Image 1 (spheres, rainbow, N blue to C red):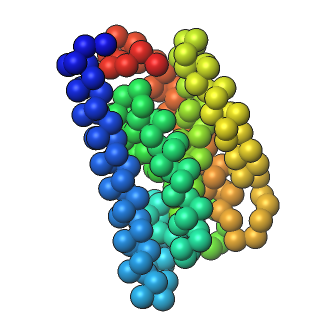
Image 2 (image 1 turned 120 degrees about the vertical axis):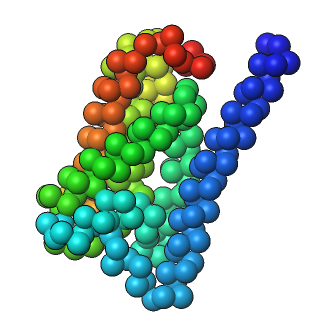
Length: 198
């Protein structure tokens, strides 16, 4: 590998750190402010079948129900988000936007009558995207990558089923489905535009 290629990869990695790190820092800053506000900001989450609750589609991923909730979402967001952008940085923005929109809209339409907050819907979207990408792209490396994610995070799949009280399984489910849908869209793109042949 040439010196120029190494520098290009280093620049790309720094960009990844800046993007993921910036979003994580934003979520933490919002949660710290919300602690002082007594959870007041959480009213801006998704409120199903209520017109004002539509704003939560955009805002809910940045809101959390306390520090433990945010800690639980931070590590998988960093790991799975970075794996999404590893092939193409632009994939991260496309996947995040579509997953947040479809997952949020599905939660708004079918969710339980409560305020839904947290980044877990987006995280499940990343999981769905990474699992399904190998199937839709049908390349050896993409399939291997999907298998690796399934091994590391396969237990997440149970989160799309009704379970623990206070957990938005609807957000998990529709985020996951949004990730699969996005994998189908991105999987159709020509391989020639790839920066790295993963």
